Image 1 (cartoon, chains in turn blue, green):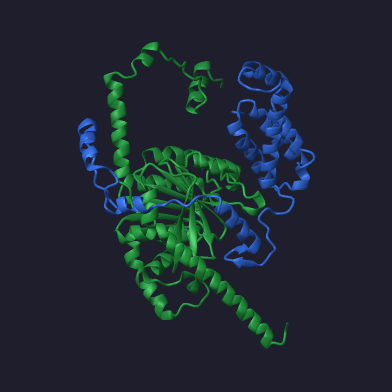
Image 2 (cartoon, chains in turn red, orange):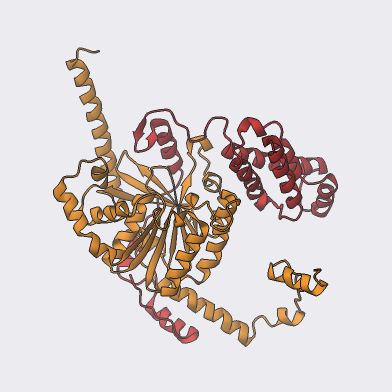
Amino acid sequence: MDKSKVLELTLVEWIANLKSRDRSRKHVRSNFEELFQKWKDLDASFDDLYETYLPRAIKAHQPLASVARNTYKTLKSKVDKTEKEFIEEWNDSIEGTGQEVFFEFFPPTTIDKDDEPKVYGNMSATEYRAQRRYADQFPTLDTTELVKAWREQKQYNPEVDDKLENILGGGSDETNS
Amino acid sequence: MKLTPEQIQAQLKLAGKGPIAEVQVSLDDIESFGDKASMTEMLTDIGKYKKMLAERITLINDALSATIPFTRENLYLFCAYTGSGKSTVAANITYPLWKQKKKTLVISNEESKQDVMFRIACLDLGLNFNDYKKGNMPNEDILKVVQLFPEISNYVKVLDVTYQDGLTTKVEGIKKALESVKKEESYSCVLIDYFQLIKYSLKDAKRTGYDNLNDLRIFLGQYIKSSTMPVVLFAQLYSVSKKGGAKDIDTRIKDCTSIVEPATVIIEIVPNFDNRTSEFIIHKDRFGRAGNKIVCGFEKGRYIMVSDDEVVEREKLGKLAAVDSKLDKLEAMVRNGKT
């Protein structure tokens, strides 16, 4: 069987299975991941898929017009959007996720390909600077008091512990650190 | 021979595809909330949770141990970009446990068993593992390292990629190994290095890498609920620069992002070469510290506790070292007659 036929069948099978799957927002990514991994295992390339199969996969994951309209009717009182806006946003969000996951699996140029010389461990100067900027977004936790408690093995107030023991019964407070 | 409808139903049931029993939720069930039985159940669960916390063990150093309870019934996902410290963290988790005579299983699909042991021994002796890898470690030091192997192997058990022809890259192999240590109950911790390499199946060669990773994810979610030890899983991340610095870890985990679901704690390792520290960013934490990071010094392969003042001092020294390095380069250029 030629490659395009196998890719086509994989898509058809995925679309068929999609009907019985959880297609809620939380599962959109993993649904696409499953299809793209199958394509990847078939050695498909970006060029094989991007223009022909990806739009069909995205379309298949988007809600039917009737389903979208009914969902809007149900949620109308809770969302401050017109029906058109609501449905467009829904479709766009699925398309966005599909595209994003697709580029992870089939980058036009390899996503981790970094031709710059490795200056910091396994990282180029560009990658390193990006990592630093990223890490700087997070506040540093002051662990002084936590460490003090950990060292004194008094993470839990003994008096409260005793009372709890009476209520809950059993359970050792010994740490094995 | 045709099967009867009953036989077909029985077969479907065996395959887990039988009809779903009708769900019943009676008002009595709802109203019974707060009665003696439900109170006992809740108090028992609180007792179990408290006991689980009390059984926490050392996680790398005091700062991390104090912040993130390292204990049974939890899956700790340590993520990093390639070359950012996954195997170093694995050795740093194993090392204090070995010193405390606690048994650890290391499933290593990347490093060989001798390298895993070598790293741990280097931490004990204050030697640089990379010197060994680059062929710069003196024979006397190598001898000291290997002499520690018997002692370490009493408590650290390693299954590497050579075990039973790559069984640790198969989802069934990992499941069996985890079930074995669970039965034995003397193990304090299991480490799996790393997730994306477990993409094969023994039973079904046609299953995709995603199917196998997803299968493992589901298994781990069930496994940790009754696990007698913490399970540490390492995972590889996509480059942050290619992801526009997105704060969300979900989009950066390679191949099967849904591993974030069963993980009870997710920590990203980001090295800082400017001040010789590493940052442990807590992305998910059932114990309530998500959104923060812990900064640890990095000395001779070990992640050590450092105060804020020490971090500032390290930054100054780092800048001085960078200036020195630039001056050295300039001097060399002048010596060579280049401008």
